[in-house]
Picture: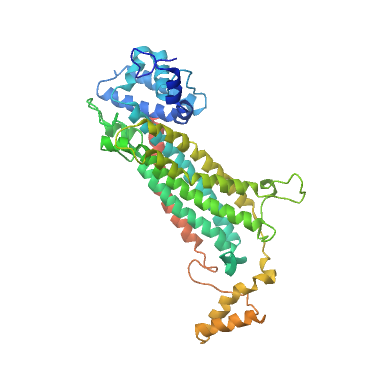
Length: 445
């Protein structure tokens, strides 16, 4: 069993060791390269306040860059008996550079170290989620424009209601993603604040330069109050989880629609063959399994905020080991949502639309409101027009006029997709991903 950073002169019971470490070694692999980035910024600052010698810093930075490359390539391992990623990195440095490697923890606690790791990991994953969300958005806008003139029934209460269009259907989910993206941007901005230097939550007697590490890591600002920096553990994950859940909610609803519209009873769309599966006994089946799994996975992601809240909500300020468990539900969620977004974009790109839905007379009543409005425009009181059309339908005498003209903003004839695209572009620009990339690349050179 490897020595712990905190270990004194007694051995810990092996079962206690197993229980308290839990899945941390597995989860910490998500954080490895971000732990290295945080250490590089920290020791660069330590050199300026005299806690690391000028000739030691280049050696430490180069060794850390090598560990970063290993982590980035998937070659980083936490050895048996080593408690966490922080211990592993320090061990690797000490093996290579001797006592010099033991200096990197000055002015730091594992509490603020894991905080900064989580912040760096999360902002990187949020950028990936934003990019994948934009890719799905682009596919939806493209399909909305392509099929803007193809009508389909709109429903309320699962009853045929009024004329809609594939332009509206695809475009609705695109615009939904703009609101989700705004939520994601808020989560990103709350994430992109530097907790490093808060130590165990009460600061340090060393004259740390927290602004320097904030700049080196490309954070927008720091978590100024050291107690609040520690209180942010769990809160950040909860806020981000709500943003992920918002996107997942949009995608899950779209997946349900697509599964329903793909069924023979609707036959509004046809999914690409490679995205369907067959039956072991029914040779005709083409099941929308991919969208069904997207729906299930996205519904699972929508439970994430509640899981995080139930772990951290009743904790007072200060660090508690309960927070370790949040990593187990939080860290893998990004990959799950990324998979769903990429699969959804793939299918939407290849989905086929039925342009002849309205050939079926069962959809004729959806034009009743159009007829009521026409009569009202000609001077008949609305309630009288409503009654007349209702009676015509009851007596089988209603003949729909399917040549409709909607002109107001956001309607069948005026989708406003250009404005929706401009809104999405404006929200994406607000993330300012370039600042982070520039800072990280400078640190790694």
